[in-house]
Image 1 (tube, rainbow, N blue to C red):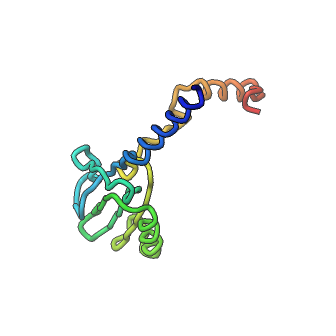
Image 2 (spheres, rainbow, N blue to C red; image 1 turned 90 degrees about the vertical axis):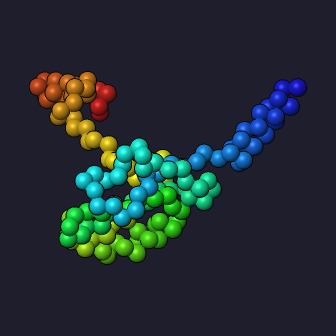
Image 3 (cartoon, one colour; image 1 turned 180 degrees about the horizontal axis):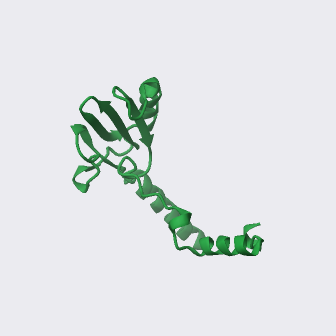
Length: 142
């Protein structure tokens, strides 16, 4: 009985993951010259399941500013496009075209803010400050 229950659980899990796969979400905008990088919630789209498994982001530096193009993509196709444009990617220079690919939901959106240890109030910062004052490192860091 236990083996049968385990088998049914495994089959149900397989059915749900193969029939109803998790759908990737990405930011989507086309050649927009914006003051931001089109990463607001109204630009979020659902990608085509089992086909578009990545998000793509193009940053194009023109004479009048920076344009962003974001979309769902096939990860393999995106990597090929990114490699093809690598010689043209010079961030900040007019004429630069940079393409990046990622495969987690909404990864072509805004970058998360950087956290600096110097400005954080974490116990690790206090441990390091204490160890520098005392002149030894705590055993947990060795």
